[in-house]
Image (cartoon, rainbow, N blue to C red; front, side, top):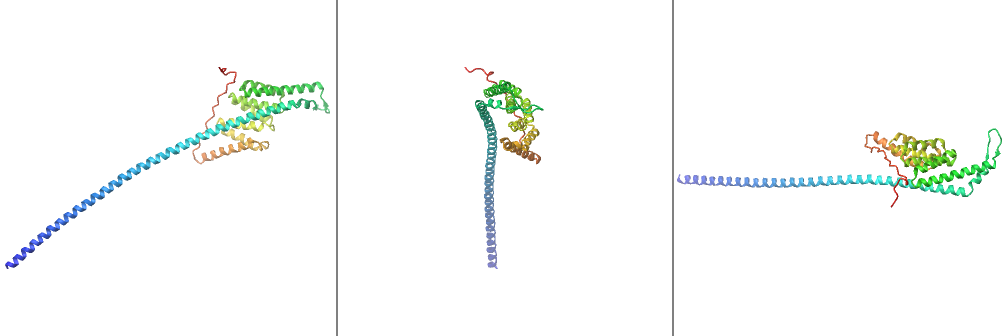
Length: 304
């Protein structure tokens, strides 16, 4: 009996010891779990901070790319403006060269005896057979033509010197003197150019309209229509500009001219813009061109 009691006590102590060991192991496992949880949370926090940093860097990069794109678009617009300005300068210089060539041709014609050709002409009298003009009449016609050509050349020199008002008077004098023929047509065209230079655009439009109607098959008919299209385009009157461009494209005598090709290109650009606007796309608004009249050399102060 005594041995049994000792055995029971021993077993009880063993059970108590095992229970304490179990409690210690459980507490140890809890501590390990807490450490693991803390480590995981710490890693997650570090990962989140890194993601936030990366996100900020990406946003900065996107903003930088947007700024670069905006700068590139602005540079492209400036380049287009410079190209347009350069194109106008080239066009103006080309017109000046053409005018100088025409002036040389006129002078050569006079030197080769253009007045002698007039002396050989005959006048057709209404209701009567052809009869030669009198020598006095032929001489007067020759003198009239030579005088008109000299006035025309002087007016053109005045134009290139910046004396636009003086040049206009000279061209007008030639036109009123001749009324018909190539010299009258050229004078009317140059009158329009003078008016453009002094910023009298409405009067210039009337001159070019008169020329295209009075000399529909003349050498300056197509350039006059093109000038009208440009003037209306600069004033943002796109419908009128389209009408004159279409007139050039429908005019057979303009088919082999530079104005025909330029008109086709400009009209195509206008139609493309209208299609984009009709589709709801954003289109750059037309801005009227503001011309500043060029002072004549007489109005400018003398250089010291």
